Image 1 (cartoon, rainbow, N blue to C red):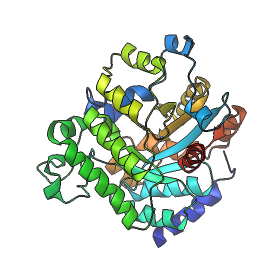
Image 2 (image 1 turned 90 degrees about the vertical axis):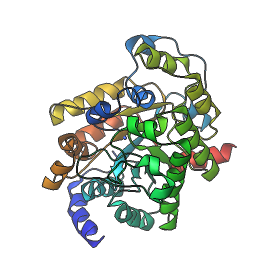
Image 3 (image 1 turned 60 degrees about the vertical axis):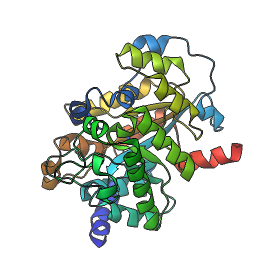
Image 4 (image 1 turned 60 degrees about the horizontal axis):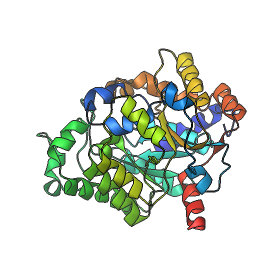
Length: 354
């Protein structure tokens, strides 16, 4: 932990402007084609015909929570924290400088405890759990938090979590999934902190309606908001189906019955062949957004040789560690009149209105 503090100090000094969430999905798509269909589709910008169609007269979650109806209410959210020290350093730097609003850490990963120790010391920061049921990298891998004897279907022949969502769906039962989800939440609580929200690594908890049901059930039981997108708007479902993704009635029913706050929209940063192209792609995406409660996720990591041995998406992650401290991006977001929020504020507003 002292090493983390030492390395973060110069990072803070490099962030000159204050107050300005899946990042690179190319590898993920190859792993989970045909399974991680629901959440991937929701991350994609709506097709042009859906964007131009007349939206039904539905109250957005932003409005229900008391935010202005005509504004984009945004959570900039860092994912995959705890996976390695490089990710921890980026998240701490961003959160300390108020340049992002939220981050989620992976309980089975080697640097999870390190990041949670920092979060405990900074309780006003919005820190949640990136519930992790896969271990996708070739050499940087992890097992379950729950006792392996209780969740054998989540483990491959090496005793590590499966590489892909498809494999989890094929081998694990909903009971095993729920057991591991609970174990990951309880690990966070046992360390002395309660997660501000939960979401799902690689979208595994949207791999089947039964997994989603376990995810939302546990969220409601603990009263910890889950990353769930509102599907009452038929434009969302229309977009999914137009892209060829099957959206089952069972999945829609589970989501519609979930009682805690939902997001109106959800996106990832997306790739770029250069840093400048990545920033321009992000700006184009933001300009396409409608008013509502939106979360965008990315995977920032500091530039080290070790990172390059972990993931093929290292370059995208390094660029994402620059983006939201970039004065040009900060100025752009200010020009859009965006209102920033986090899951702590969302739940406070939700409780006030119950």
